[in-house]
Amino acid sequence: MGNISTSDMGFLYGFSLFETFLVNENGNVFLLDKHIERMRSSALYFGIDAPKDISEIIKKYICEQNIKNKIVRVTLTSGNKQKEIKPSIFFSNRENIYTPRKIANGCKLTLSEVRKSESSIIIRHKTGNYAENYFLLQSAIENGFNDVLFLNSKGELTETSKCNLFFVKDDTLFTPNISCGLLPGIIRQWVIENSQKCVEDSFNLEDLLNADEVFVCNSAMGIMHVNSIDEKRFKLGRMTKFLQLEYKI
Image 1 (cartoon, rainbow, N blue to C red):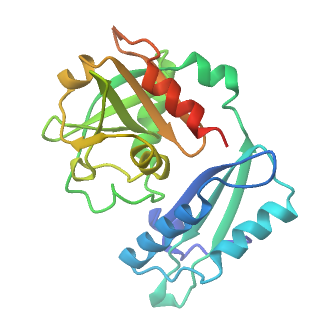
Image 2: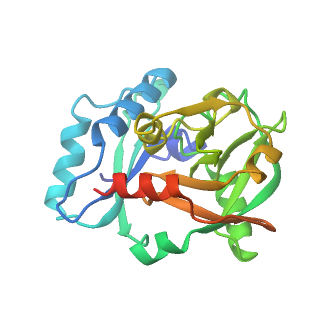
């Protein structure tokens, strides 16, 4: 916490990492160790000197600020090694907008005309380079949708602007493979590990539109069923209900 140097690469180029998660009513974070592990892994990949005590720093912030039932974002800037500026950690928190009613209502997706690059070196990391996702998300909201769905340059399914994507067909769960160009989400991995069988592969839009049920997930909202993708509608399905019940934290 504190000020950021104008020479910090996080300020200059959005070269930063962040994690967003829900702090529950007891002040705890579901799978916090996984969030820290992902941030450390990305920091190592990009050569960012992450503090060794980042876990303690996060827990101290939650405790001192008495954070409960709020969404917290922790940002790690990359600093600037050439100018001997060390990375900085910043926190922000906001109200938990994902009420039980909102989760029950589900969400509406729209397909983006923008294609994601499966070869991008940053798409598999949770970096501060989110301007494109933010802009396209706001455009979708203005047009009456909740989120925007992306395909990659090969026409394969990837993710939404802020969620991982799953669909069910004939009682089998499917999700795009990381190689398609998407963030390896914390809740995505939890869903995979808590399902009897989940097929990770490359899929096209037709596969998705022919699904029996569709849902999205992230660490702020948990699991939410998809009501529609543009004109195609879906019902809340058995497997989505099951995972929502299992996810209760």
